[in-house]
Length: 404
Image 1 (tube, helix red, strand yellow):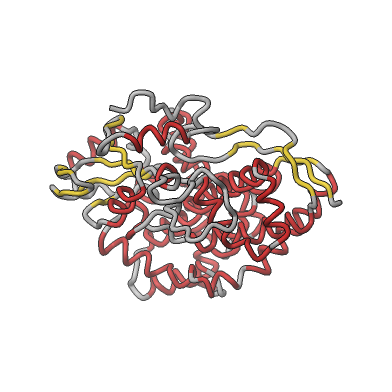
Image 2: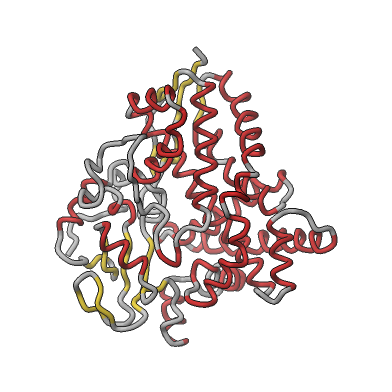
């Protein structure tokens, strides 16, 4: 039993760590709302890495899949069902591996390093506007726009469309949060997928006629080679933005918040910019943005010292695993030079985050430029945090900055 574990509580988002510690102290995988919760690092890594533990519902028969879809109110959404509920994230086995192979060349470190000049120019332009103000909301005024602009550039979309694509993505992804799964949100999510689909169809047609060095052009090449269908192409490009924009915003917000409440570590990082890669990894460990991912047992199996029947639902608590004292010395200490740092913020196994290198690149550049240009950064109000298990990060983070 998990009495007292209440992610919907208003204070959970700001300080979930005591609740996770209590879960880690419980034996086995305790039951919570139909899920067996894995909260310790070894358990989370073992389950995430085991191909018998799957994300999709293909292991259930058509009737059971439909029952689950209706029970969660994910039915009567033709475009959402076609492009979101069957995306790469919800597939397993050969189909999942095939789609990852189709886009992986655009997510290698070498390829993504070519984005550094674009990201740096964008960040500097934003700071040119914000720093003279002296006070701004780090989330709304800076972090919220960066990932969508970078992913839009990677896809090949018009920069002016990036904010709209980001909003479509938010409207789509937010419907997965049980607390926001209302009739209004359902219609909003479906409309967002329709509009995103139409925009990507236009981009597809343009790149078909006028190829460029971007992800859409590369995906069209994979489509022409028979590596994926047209619907899979559209769904995969959508998924890249869905998975990459919100989580990176949350990671940026939590990362700056960690620096603000640990000014000694901010000073250390300012004095030694070479620590930025390890600092960003520590930001992801200390407060990962994606805190809960599910898996289903695809067969009767034994894992984490227990036997589980086919269909058992498991919730992987990445945030809890990253504060496990069995995996990290002094895990509640924020250390920008922490090594080794084999955190689980990006998951593990077949579904390990495809865009983790891009997320880290964005954060390394953002914090390097911010610390170089703002010599003093302090809170200018109270941070407002998300609640629930859908995502973790500040909704608002007001700061005051000076250049001396």
